[in-house]
Image (cartoon, rainbow over all chains, first blue to last red; front, side, top):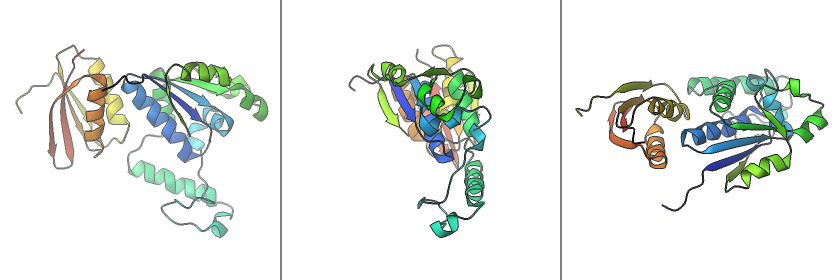
Length: 157
Length: 78
């Protein structure tokens, strides 16, 4: 076995329910595998860090051809369809005993994953530091790249 | 298998990544040389525990499948 990477650097750029899961699953697993991990929450990914928001993320059926129950786009535009698809998705996740986003988020924070909230996104969206959960850092691209630059595996969601 | 575990962890009903996270936490609480018995129902747990022991250096000393249960004996090595 060659030299292995000890760092995982993740970019979370989307705020939908399905996009929020992989960063936390991989971050917590990385820590369990004795790697260091940081997640840079930028653009709509920053929504995930809004206080009380982690379990309110939604999935839109429109333009999503991979929904297990096929919902035509012409139906997906109707009011209430996003809530319905979100309810279905949450139901499937519960049935498969998958942890909630908030649970994985808290495990990640407690186990030492660094959360870097994007300052520029905060300015764009008009968020203040107190709008976001405690225990995170606020920084820019350079803050993330300083961490990622030290031989990290980098992935973006 | 006649190994007596020092600690028993039940991860039945938990999906990825929880069995790995709980296994790591349990191993951390043991002394070097002690053995953890972990039971999971997640079919992905075998490949994940294999990968986890390979990466962390802890030793998978025994593995058995009993119906829908996957049973691992892991020795803390460091």
